[in-house]
Image (cartoon, rainbow, N blue to C red; front, top):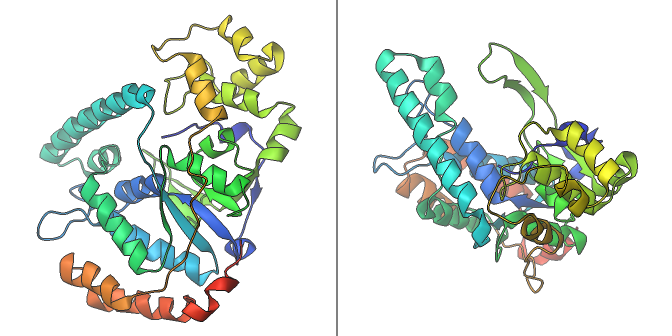
Length: 340
């Protein structure tokens, strides 16, 4: 999902304490897909489910990661996608096709007892439905966390919040928010420690990192308009990218050619979606400018009812998280002290 060109962008490592006291806008779908990909049964490759067959991996991930953020003094603001632009349909269909292909491979691997292949391809079968979104929003609201419904792309709304100084940064794994104009992007938020290299028996260290738009533009010598063109050349949620062009070649091309019109003369735009439509969407993304971010208070009873009574989570584990939350959640009288 999103644009993957971070390897050519200047960034610096962070510690969780560096973000203490700050509001962070979170691309909710980005994180929920993470949870659905990672929190799975090791043998079957299936996401966690309750006895009624309802997926609960996303709830587990949201509960523990949000609690960790709050314990670190971070003020998360979860933003959910709204109606996608019409030209995103091709991307949606392509993702559906890839999920179906991955599911077929995974099922064959199950029959063969190939657990490694099952684990690898199960991560590509993740699908978010309306029931998951509804339960995710309920959990966050019961935890006192702002739930924002974007009119269109969630990262566009996150970026507006950051530009308007309603939040300090946007949290996501890809750089779409920078293309949408967010001054700051935080990657790997609350994802620390070792992560397994896909398909290999090796690991690498993962730490949170900050990417600032101003520094990106200064050190690469480009403008935001050219950053958008780089993303388009590599591939976005709205177009597949140009075959044979990676981040470094795309950077060299925009430095030389300057404008979208000049770049398009050098490449074959291989999609029905007009390049100008994609460019204009990133330059002027739809966002609700009237939304006011409001934090609530923790409702332990509702959290427990949703997770333990309805979705069969371990009461002991949920109670343990709730005890932590009770120590860090603000009271009604102190809500005004939550800073940006």
